[in-house]
Length: 472
Image 1 (cartoon, rainbow, N blue to C red):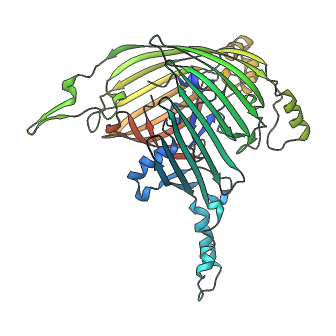
Image 2: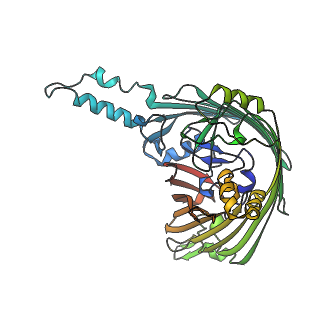
Image 3: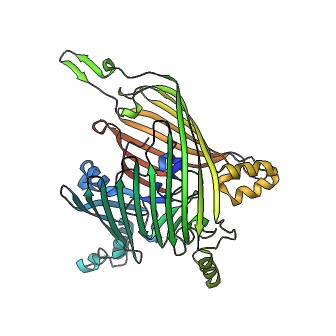
């Protein structure tokens, strides 16, 4: 069913969404904002690992992606490939390369159009366009297994059209009942619910997360520190999110989730065995997570509290210097905050996703309450005042997430993720589609629950090809 843990993860800083803006292939959601679409969640596999596997199925190992560049003349279309990889039993290293062909093609075309009919440009005249550094981006990534239960990830990337580089470090420690993660990035890329990107100069986080128990209880505690003021990358107006402003935040959250089946057709051994003249053959579902038709309802409820330290002096300095990159939020960030969140989801699936066609139709409908306090305040204050509050706090309105999946042929599935804003305030548009993503996936039966996904977001005007594993 639709990923209920999105509610829990989005209250922290580690919920990654897919994005072609970086060679890492991901950006962080802004904490405290409406939950992102399930179809936008980034793959659990690192981008460099994805390219290593996807390259086997693409010509010359080149994977296309689509996303706006810092300069319009570079275009949105780009090509990525894994230039170098080296692996041992405990350590691996990889180099990613990216190339944007639009500017190169335009430059060469202009070179030919500016000459006389009887003359042709020389080799040097054409070759100089290939060495333009703005066309290329490179990223280096390395992972070291320190112990059987811990690992260290280091990465750096540079884009030719931009000054500076991106650096990232992650230390992961697996404990018997918890996961401990230390992450740092210079800078860290965030994306808000409107599709606007923000660069935070320095972001450091330390999180302790419990494993989901059989009872459905889960909790997390963490420390997060921002340094420097966020810079808008694709926004010309609006205020920077308060949660991205400088300061140290101590946060804790818990959640409890439960699900119940109305009916379910459990898979039996004879269902995956096919008898032919040549003998018996094993034919499992293309995806083990989609092998059983069912109808179910599930829900999650939780709470989060946060305490902020520092950051006020930095805001005053930024306001006095007249930073052109951001607009300082007029609202003051509360040093102490606590809130509740919740989601309820209904799922219906027809088919076992085993036959070549007509064997999978699935619908997920999930209602999200991102902030119980903001929603209650809006209801109690009345429609007139809530229309103002909803502008200041986007989490005050509930949202309905709809996911539709339909088998096209064999392992190919078409999927649409949409988010409907349920806003009945006076003077507003009323319920409307706030965001949606369409995708086409090819399930890999050998990976049990792995697939190659090609998605496109009309709102962000971005698209990628990814390898996703166990995304439910």
